[in-house]
Length: 578
Image 1: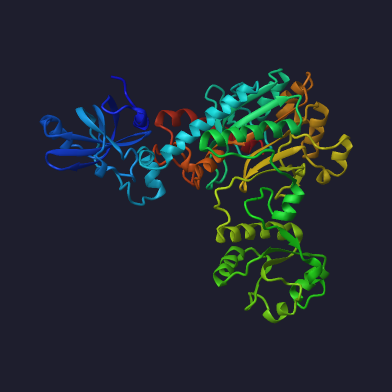
Image 2 (image 1 turned 180 degrees about the vertical axis):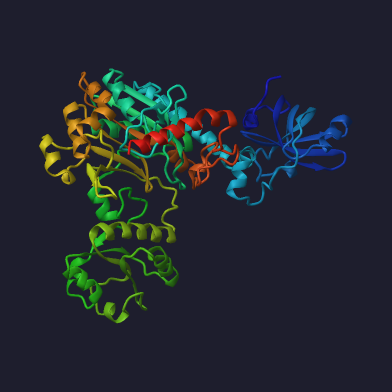
């Protein structure tokens, strides 16, 4: 008899024989009848063995949680007074006619109904997946990947794989490197993205490409970052930004409908990078609630609040948030905690008919007649520090007021990002990546004032999370070489690192562009999860370790003998070379 999944039992006629395979959830022994709940990846159902089957009854009595069993029997409706409306398949049960113990489970390493720490759950990930929402998250992720593949295939994209082992090309995130045994002193880099390869595919006339690309970045980890992750990589020739917007919006509409049954409205709103920063203090604005940053500089120019008045007189700004409802002390405390340690100047004012609550000089603000009833969050200083600070406070206030958990999905495109930015060491670096097309008509515009140049780049943001980013690419070798030079690379460095790519651009490269979507982040939002670890089968901890396998680990003896002399030789060569 073929296996039946528990999730399909609703469609099975009563008194029809089925075979179920799965894990025992729990057993209830009533002497002459034993009930046990069986689970597979699609659901749970109650089974029972009665007195006429003495041998089966004894076997059922011996079952333990998480034993693996096979059971055959008839699907029966439960008696009306035994229907469990709080249980999946609570109106049916299976009357077992055969029962086979396929494998016994020892006592589980932790209490699955308790609250184990993250390391314990990851060490015994197979238990965690079996007994947590992660199992269903993996189902949603699978549906999502199938939906995206079908959508892109329907739109004439080809799925093409690119190498994981490649050449290190500085300019992006830190790479993991792999020593090459056959060529001592040489290394592969694990690809941080397929950027150059997908552009070369466009030059190769593939025209429309996509890939579920595994990417590797040696970065500090957090809730939404892993050292290895998956992105949906998309590239096409002869396209514009409008083509990308239309393609991705259609994908999102289909994705949300197929995975979680939510209707998404398109087209999505758009705003420039400058507008996002000015209104929301973030280049990934959360539009689930209406609260924008306002300019209060002129209000404080002649104010009695000297701390802010002085900032304005010295050329600084005062920006602030306004919420129509007065807030109590608990909300003010939340804001204090969010603002503490930032180094920014700030003050909170909550005005109601009953009076005024503020962490600043109350008498001063009582005389400011332009203050309406409600709550203000003010900050003064340089605009580039004040705006992101208020952006963080906006989210903290939205979280406290319950405005971020309304089961809404708000997309927005953020466009016209600066092409270049100043790095921590004072050098110039690409704000997106160095292959992005600058929005200029003359190469000299890049050379003369690079920080004023905008990129033909776009990010797609969902509920305050950047779920994708892309750009129109440079397809002219001379323009690409000019961008590299602006970034401080010498001609010899350009040739050494990117010579092969510039050769490709010189051989008939078409206009092209694309986008990369963070598939793990999208899955996290679709599942309502708090962390990427909840939607990845075998994730790493915040320290980059895998408790399940013990990775990373030291080399085995034979590996050490082979590789360590190579590393020592490389170090000696570096020392001798200065």
